[in-house]
Length: 237
Image (cartoon, rainbow, N blue to C red; front, top):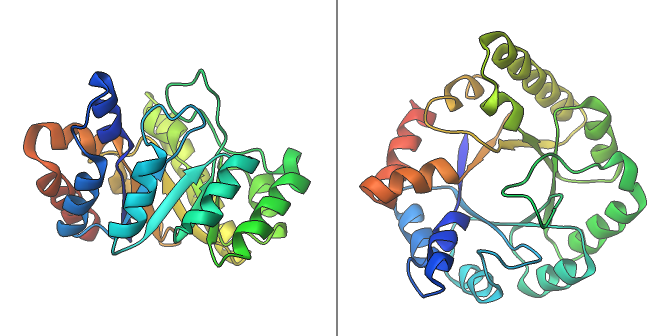
């Protein structure tokens, strides 16, 4: 199972002082040196953390796999087709949210998302759709010729009751199986950390985990390279 390290919150720390440090590009280099399989960043409409300059620099320096998370807007499609990251993950976006609150509603936005997927794929960009663990969303993603789905694991990660945890885990497991049967690549992310990731590792259809906040939180205490290595040890057992 591959690990994509999301470096957004390195940029969040930088923006707390609107300065130059810490540098998300330097964090990406450290993550790759520690063995990360890819780098993930989310360029938001309001540019609250990652900036356009960061994205262009990341394209130049990332040697593994650059995954750009973005909303399905004309502005973002234009930027993506200029930068040409290895992958684009289409996500919902709400200016008032602290973090992404749920999956993309593929079913209700089929025509628009289909056009965005087509534009991105015409530039040889692999396209993933960030979706809730719901079968109708997975089926819609497959019909739109997406390459991957990223399963939103937020409800699983935030569940407090053990029964709820197990219920959400089984939803993720069954949806991952369904997505694979439909020919989609499968990744997962949101709210995963050094503890709750362990049960996700048993779902063989999931090829990649995209994790950011928990890594950055640990990196603040022990450094990025060590934080990434410790998570990789758990993932690769």
